[in-house]
Each structure stands twice: as C-alpha cells, then as structure tokens.
Image 1: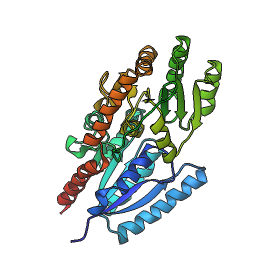
Image 2: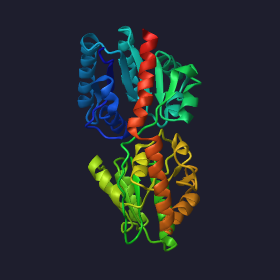
Image 3: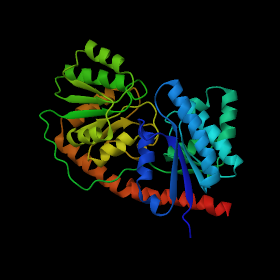
Image 4: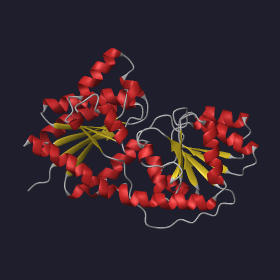
Length: 355
C-alpha cells in the first residue's frame, strides 16, 4: 500500500525563526517512515521583489503538485498578517482541488490580529472555518481558537526537539544568561535591560548574551545609556550551530515575552539542561512551572524579573536542579519523535474522514 502524501507549505528553510525550525524538525523526523512529504516554500526574508517572486513560484508549484503529486493533505504553516493572507490563497486553491487542509498556526499574537477590526475579524473567521483542521501550539491557544471554529476542528501539537542524552558541564567565572529571540518590545528585551541595570546597581556579577535580529540599534543605544556594554554582548542573528554552542556554555535562558505560542528557544534551552525565566503567556505555563523548573513572571514586571534573575545568578545548585528537571521534561514530553505520533494521528483521522 502506498504511503499517504503530504504537501507541506511554509517558509523557506533558508529563512530565520522558530517556524522554520519546526518545519525542518518535522521534515527530518520519523514521520517520513509513514508518509511521503513534499515541501513548497512561500516566503523568504528579503526585498519586495524577492518575496513576490518566491510566492508566485509557490503558486505555480502548488498547482503542479496538486495535479501530479496528488496529496492526501495540504499542511500549511501559518502566522498572522502577510503570512495569513498568503496562506489564505494557498488554502482556497487547495480546497478547489478538494484537498484536506491543515492550518498549523504559529502566531504569538493572533488574537490582536484577529480583533483589529470587524471586517477583518469576519474574514479571518470565514477562512479558518474553511480548513479541515487547525493545529495549535498549546492548550491555551486550543481554547482560544475553539471560540472561532468548532472545537473538534482544533488539535494541539506541541513544538518538539531531538532530545539530547549527553551531560553539559558549565564553569563560567560569572553566571551567563542568554536572551534568544527577536530583539524588541514583544520579547521583553527592554524590560530585561532595565532589570540587568538593577542587578548591576546591586553589585550582582553576571554576563548576558543577546542573540537575535530585530531592533538591534535601539537595544545597543539603551545599553550604552545604561553603561552596560561590559555586561551585555549583542551577537545579532545566530544560526543553529551557533545557538547550540551558546546553549552548551550559558547558565540559563531569559525570555520575558509579552506574547508567545510555544517558543522553540525555551524547548531548545531545556534540552541543554538550562533553567528558564519567562512569562505567563501562550503555552509557556504548560512547560515551565514557577519555582520548579524555572521562574514565570507577568509581562512587564521588572521587579519580579530582577528577583528571578537574582535567584538563579546567586545559586548554582538551583540552576543545576532546574536544568536537570528540564532535560527530563524534554525527554518525556517534547521529544520530536514522540510528538510525530500525535501528528500522524491527526493525518490519519483526516484521511479516514475523507475515505
């Protein structure tokens, strides 16, 4: 019997960000033992002309694949704004060909996008209800989307990583924290800088790496104003190999975001045995328990962010214990091979319903 065929639609694997990591992890996983996957790239960061060209080419490839590859399912990875509108066109074309369509939603702030105005809200609701299945990143987002589409249409598929079995030993002269993500207000970068300034005023010895693109010039300016150049090292965007090198040597991850899905940065850091400081948003509270395997604060709560940082920076044993728990959580709950069984169940249910 032939394997079912899955047409995967999403950003170029040459692009940046967590969605690309998710697509690549799925593509490299054991899912290939049971399905034939074909990928179409619809977006890459660059000029308007470059983005337009890759999308037009994607439409042509989609039409060809729908006719020649004849997928059982079109699995679309989607975010908000431009990504939503591009993927709307993909969805409509796929439904014209009577294909099962999954919208795999990675947006961290889809609620803001959805509620921006009434006309857009009605259009988004109409499009989401055309999909056969919405795949979301957490129970919190499952509850949210179940108010827009019938609840049975929504399934949770957590992001996953390839769990590591080796141990990591860290002996930094001063504890080192890592911020990993797009620099800016949404990820809480400026809150973190304010908190680091408080740590410096209290004489707490620490170093921080900021890894990511975004508002680099603005962040550097604030660091200069606070005279934190000796404390914070801005690395800019780093590739996957560089990320792994950082995760091997730093002591914890801090990501004080204002909205999220389920950040790959958190899962990857847990995989390397790091404690986490983050916020009560998105799917993060489903992974991090405050005062157990990390610390959670409310977005914008700089005082409690400083307290959490102080706790980790001044207690090596606590860092090690939280990190050990996080590695166990990854192995037991977020290993990509285990999660692919959940994805396969989603695929199989759609295929059976079509038969």
